[in-house]
Image 1 (cartoon, rainbow, N blue to C red):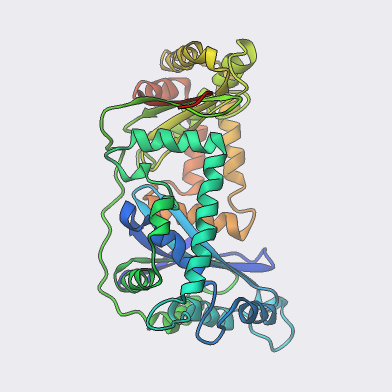
Image 2 (cartoon, rainbow, N blue to C red):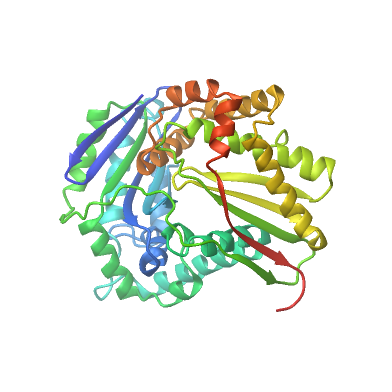
Length: 421
């Protein structure tokens, strides 16, 4: 069971006590409104923080310290959750009971994490220029690798076009041109702003008592000088009218992406029915899109749907021969219409519910899975805890799925095909 407490204004600790694992985990996330002017800054910051601190000024010193802590690890953590972007660090470490007699890991690990956040290496009143420039190159490379994956590229273009009036269309890591403009001084100024203004979400998974973890963290967090800017609650999709765009690129397989919107979000009582709908429609190999569009009609090489519950957006992505674009598009819409009409067999319904429940059962398989689920749930404003959500899924009927489908509206599309611009 998750336990949440406020450590100080704007700082919450979520603890999940679990004695099954050899390692514990802790994440610290500074939560920001998703915005183009700072998305790249937020994505770059944790990578630079990981390069050096006051007492551990380079990667070698940091590695040696982590080795002393029984091979603990620290990594950058950047998430996009609905209207929010988070920037911070994620750490895993061996539980104290598995260390040698007399050795402590939790306390020194949190002290080390505190130094990485609050005592970065500073030169001439800013982050070291060489560290910033090196991590900028790494971030640009990561962004460009996503562009080189045409499936990811097409999906990103769909959301960007679809969400013209909504920040959900912004890339999680920002855009290349925004990264390239960042200076060491600008990043340091933004870092100071983050420490001063941002709500902080801490997630701990391990065997230690929540009060013990909270007291240790308070000692580190006293370094915060706060003028917290509260976040607005998550909102449903608020984009403009739809768009249907086509782009040419030197590719062998065309990519068709279609975007749909619904008023049902993960804060809605109908969320389980919407999740089942997505799974029946295109969420797996027993779905209507896979069985009909791919297998029976051979219109595509791959096809699946996804549902962004925090915003109320459903998307379909298909790899196709470009000559089959219109036929594929029409058949995707026909399969959604079948869902609206309640043309769903008991076998389809059962397979979809079983797939969702099986996925839900993996939430508590590892500290990282626990942290990911509860962090996302807390920040997205989700109303369902796992047991309640599972019960909701199990109770969904064909009529519920049809009712959810009737609230889904086709909004936008993006078609990436072969050829030159």
